[in-house]
Length: 476
Image (cartoon, rainbow, N blue to C red; front, top):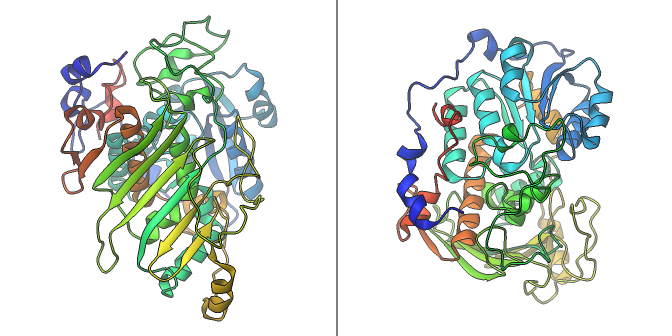
């Protein structure tokens, strides 16, 4: 277990080898040809897919539907497992690897873009190597687990401006994205002072014993699985099925909990179009079942943002947990089952309660919204009818999120959720998870990007130092 004492003794940017302006490291960039855009309207993008089971497999299927992808490589640490067989059988000509480093080493010149659909903790090294080699990157949200990993990913993307990046909050290419932008530009959404965001469905760790005092007991590593590579830069853990097959999301060491999983689908447009950036304070209002290993049974977290230009200061309050339902305003109506919202892995939608979504409070209007691409409505109904004639026309999307990425690789569009847009939001989530782990409020200096009231929390911005052999990924 990482204690405050031993962490403060070993952690920090210097100990972790983190540097934004660092030199050296062993990642070697390719020549200028690796930065070329894919030319020609009929040219397919040579895509390498890292993570091919579960969500990673879903991503590959979505890229296939666009007609713009040519899958040339498949990479997964568990290639012999049942959950990877479907994708392997679908692309028999694609070269296969267990280690993404070997994949890039052996066929880097054949790869133009990479999809990353792996556990949260492994996004960072895969993306950093891809960026260093000039490969376009599509990565599932959240971008990474720690604040400074996201910072380094944004810096790496900035260093390679011809490389296309896209984070997988797919609602950013659907109706809510265009509606929110149009309503904000038209002055319908203005002077927002509070947002309530909620995701109250059952999660995998609900029902676990929160009196935990040690990590799960080790189990035999499944035959054919490369567990060492699965761990990547994280400190060594014995294999356990309580980490594998999606269970990694439950643990602070590997995942980002409900906030990191669903926050990007609920708060994304609020964060971008209200220009929130980073909070100055994060407060754990309620943490039920707090422990040092996995996420609470329920969490209420308040993120406080300062005034931005002519926009007032505002708060976002996040609610998760089955019995942690936020209050709703008069005239809210019902929480419909929206077909745009996927079911939750490990749980079921609760039609009798609130479905994942948000309530946006401004000085004149209240908006009700769901998740992903679901559009906003004005409440109560009488106010919506009054405003109907004042609402602007909303642009239709020219492409879904997957097509948008591949078209951007071809130079025909710009991605809607690149690292420079999504990175600060992912950092907001990392601060929220840090507060969950600390069970204490933090004050955050937006200019220096430091926590000013908690030394241990400030060290945790960098995370634990990477395992030996993984330090190179933390240098640009």
